[in-house]
Length: 345
Image: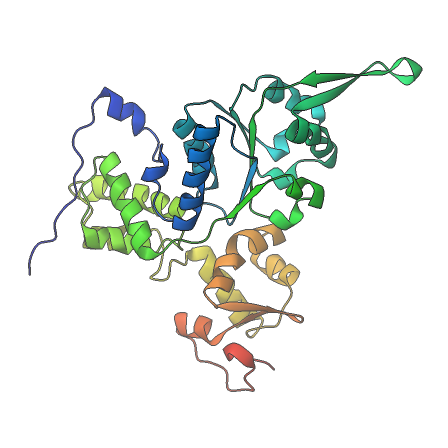
C-alpha cells in the first residue's frame, strides 16, 4: 500500500508565531466553508471601500462553533479598522455600554456576542446609537433632569446569537444584514483540520484529517478541539505525527465514536432506551435521572442527537429512534411503529 502523504508545516518565524498563536483565520479568503455568506460579505466589503462608508449593522446567527466570531474578527482586518468585543451578559445596564460607544471611531466595529442575552433596557439605549449614531444621557433627577444628546462616530454593530428568536423584533429589525451560518461538510472540516495542523507545525495525513473531521459534528470548533487532543496524544504516545491509526486511537481514548457521539451523548441514549423504554419522556425526568440540568440536555446534548435523527421531540416527550437503537447495538422493540421509525407504545 502506498504511504499516505504528510502535510507538514515549516518551522514558524517570529511573525508566523504571532499570526498562528490562534487558529482563527485573519482574512475572509482564509475562511473555509460558508461560501454564500462569504460571497455576500465580499460584496459588502467592496461597496464599503468604494462608497467610503462603514458596513451596515449585521447579525450572525447559528449553532455554537460555526464561525460567527470569526466573521466578526476578519471584517475589521479587511477594512483596516479596529474592533471592540463584549457580550450580552456583560452588559447589565446602559452604563456598561457607554465606554464601548464613546470609544468607537469612524468605520470601527463593535461586536456583541450572545446579543440575545442583553437586557431590554440596554437594547433600548442602543437603538439611537444604531440608527442615528448618537446616545441620550439623562443628567439629574426629577424636575431638574435634562437629556444630553451625544453624537457618535459612524460605526458598525455586529451581533452574534445562537437563538435569534429570543431577540426582540425592534432589535432584530435594526440589523440590515442577517446571515445564518450552517454546519460544515466533512471535506470542509478536513481542510480546516489540515490547515490548522500546519499552523501548529504538526504533520498529519489526509485520511487522519478526514477521520477527525468525520467525528466533529460539522462544527469547526469541535474539529479544532479534537485536533488539539490528537496532537497531544501523538506527542505523548507516538512520534508527533498524526496518521490514521493515531487519530483513531486518540479519538477512542476520548470516547468519541464514529458518528461523533461522546460519552454523555451515549449515556443520554442509554437512559432513554433502558430506563424509559425508548420514550416518550420529558426532559425534566431525563435530567433528574442523569443528574444534569435541563439546560445541559436541551442546549448541549439534544441538538446533535436531533440532527442525527437519534431522537425526536413529540408532544408527549423525547423518544429514541430506530437509528439510536442500532447505534447502541440494542434490539428494536417489536411494537407499533410510528412515522420516521419512531416507536409508539
